[in-house]
Image 1 (cartoon, rainbow, N blue to C red):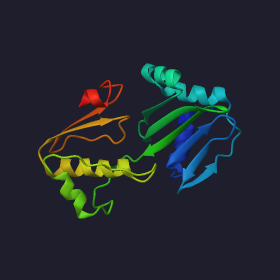
Image 2 (tube, rainbow, N blue to C red):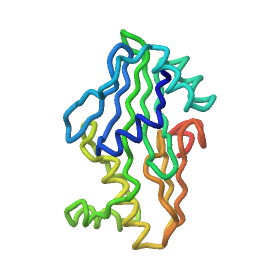
Image 3 (tube, one colour):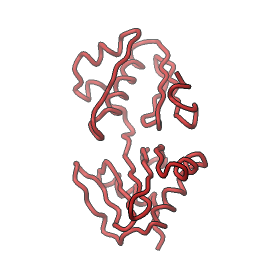
Length: 191
């Protein structure tokens, strides 16, 4: 029986999983509230994982995967969700992690962000670093900050991302989102 990536992702979303993990040699797993849970199905073969991931990549992503043995990209299933994907190789074969990107961008108020975040959004220039471990909310925080700027000032926002996660509409700002290796050769070239 062929394993369908869309069905696995729909199952993950239905079960409020933050991530779907595919790893050759073990059953698919989801992360719910920080805990890993196996999906009740047989272990996936290298061929199954590789096919599922390879089939959703474009030519550039496939080339990067073949050359570097890993790649990051975004993937969307309309009317379901958008995902950040990390495809990689591991000792048993192919692997991938699909991170569910929320469809609604949370406001800084929703995030209970301190006032300093709003103040930073209103500065005319400067450099702000948002750092932290995987899953700590960096992308969500940055999306909330971009959204705050977009709601409160007439300006031009350019993001350079690898890959684009949250998609922003132009409201008070013109928002141009550029994805590395799709819209620009790299971060330094985009600057």
